[in-house]
Length: 322
Image (cartoon, rainbow, N blue to C red; front, top):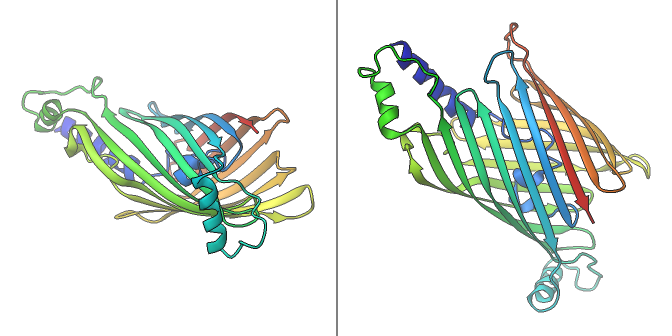
């Protein structure tokens, strides 16, 4: 009975972590926007590399940890279909008689994310590609797609069962497996410039079980993600950037992140935001003249657990090449 209860609680926690929580969303998602929406792959510089680590300290063993890598390369095709598409978009938006200074951009990238929480492990890897079509002198309309593989696993090696032969829950896991692998396709679009961003993405637009125990029902819910930001220029060197992220998953409360970021000469920033799961976040970082990126964030969640420290630290390192 004890083992059944343990397994039931574990599976419930894993399902909630996979579907309803925000632990795998980067706190500093403005540094890795394509991990939230593939249409934002290539929104930055010519080459973007990011590595990050987040650890949620809750005062017990097996606290959540996430590691991620993201790399992107932007290409600027010209001539042929690229020029025709550019001209058609200029006509459609009414800019055919004005100079459209932006170039058509195509971005390709790859990423990997690993999350751990107690006995639960999640590994995700795939590719992003996006096309950014200029629709004005400084704005773009982009469409992105991201095929990926997701693997979910429960490690029961440390589980002690009094009567393993008679425990149906334990035997079911042994028989059907403690992991599964899914093939997903994510997609999204955005309208953006250097001053504003409006984006919509859908996570698990296509979702197919490749192998493993489908009864675990981990990480199989469709997610709708909305993002927005706008740069308010205070003076030529300083700006305030209000940001918002909304995530909708059926059968779960709507999740949102609302905040504001201060930026100086586009190279130094600090920000505060609030998430609907009663989490307060602070971040700061900088980009050097050589394109080295550093970002740090701390988040504190008010969970009503006085005996546990419920804070998370996230560090992002990167390289931006023009």
